[in-house]
Length: 561
Ligand code: ATP
Ligand code: MG
Image (cartoon, rainbow, N blue to C red; front, side, top):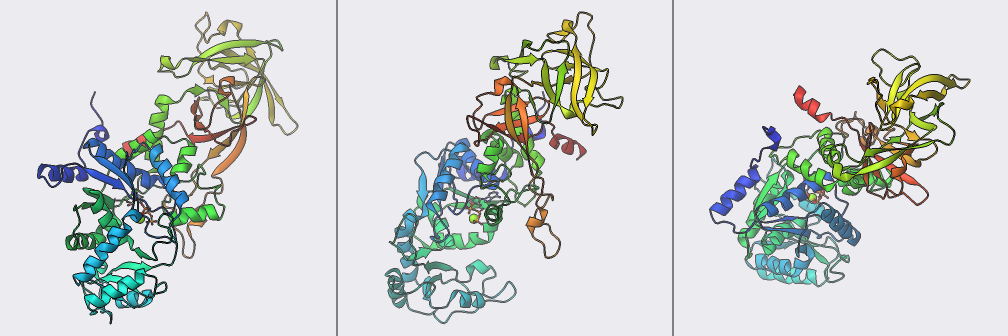
């Protein structure tokens, strides 16, 4: 069989760079890392970055590190550290013994800052953040030099040590690299390396009142850990020059190579931490782990699997330029995984009662259905037929068009795994609403066929109305109505694009085999979609999230081109 394009093992541009580095001896073992700031929960974009970094380390028999870039004591929290570790582990990206924190390098980074000062490559500036911003210039205009720029190394060293000792207040002084205020790259215009924050840090406590900027800590942390390939998103392309400048100036043990790739964007999805926080804070969703959220906690609760996300990372690929992926691709990856693994069950989400009039009141007939049509090793489950059953309201029509093959007056259908029934009567209330459908079973059709070999065109799913498992169903649609949730008319913001019907709660009925299902278990409800048991489930009440529908829209879009 010929493999589809996307299944072919091709090298991406990052692998090409790594191969060349290995061939030319610039690296021996490949070391990658995922470097989150512990200031929020991870989302699907991060998942792609984790899978990419971990995948490369695995592929090349190297190492993968998890390093928290925890340089900002104001916005960061220990709770996020634990949550991120749990999410990374869930994705299957093991870091072995390599859990690191930029804060563990604060002593070393401080020493290197003094090294720069001594060499005349950094100075203490008295200018305020605002003044620094003003003097920075623009893309068209060069910046202007600070009055403190020509301080001697001795004076700078003395001031820097006093900054560390706590002699100055927040924002009173900064340490800046001395590079070039007229440099075309704004990041090279004497960037700030250290700032004063009299604030305790979640790991180093009160030890420091002086904290390195992300740009000073990041590259050096990679160098300390021996990260060979520092893979990051495109917005850091403009910072690479600065990172390389610092690495060249400092006596670092290793020289990492930075490679940028395009961040993952997905239609109908936001991946800005700030906006996700707003959705939670303002109550537009039920929390960080709301199944409509693109956070790993959210999509996990929705029913996404690590396997599906790894497949997404593989298929979305690494790109050099920003693009937007179709949400249908992500759903395709999930469906592909669940199709193979999820046990089948029958469940009715929008029930209407059907009475099999030729069965006695206390009839109980036992049939069986495979847990998976293509995997006999997954076994079978018992399905129980009684006189009263539920079917989906949409599987009955009083006045059906020609091509409608489900139940209708006088028509015969197969009840999946059980028998044939023919509709004989419809009971309606005063408003004309169908309350009950009466059918007759062909007793010879038990087991799903008749001696005369008669064919029925429609097979519908059903659940006993007297022997079942009731559940709360939570049916989700996209959280946003627009492909680009940020696209708004003048003056509006992304909240205007929220889908008011992104959650619909109902009551459904499942076959008895659904009893005892545990949170995170996933099922295919036959003919309806994939569903995942929600952690809100208790002994008294089963809660079921609709994960994704059965129909693939991605393949179709691909064909259309
Ligand atoms: P912030 O705006 O707070 O910096 P962030 O999403 O960049 O948000 P980080 O914790 O700094 O958060 O991200 C950790 C890593 O994940 C970084 O290497 C970053 O490049 C990568 N990353 C973040 N968002 C995406 C995305 N959408 N696609 C791919 N990688 C991403
Ligand atoms: Mg970031």
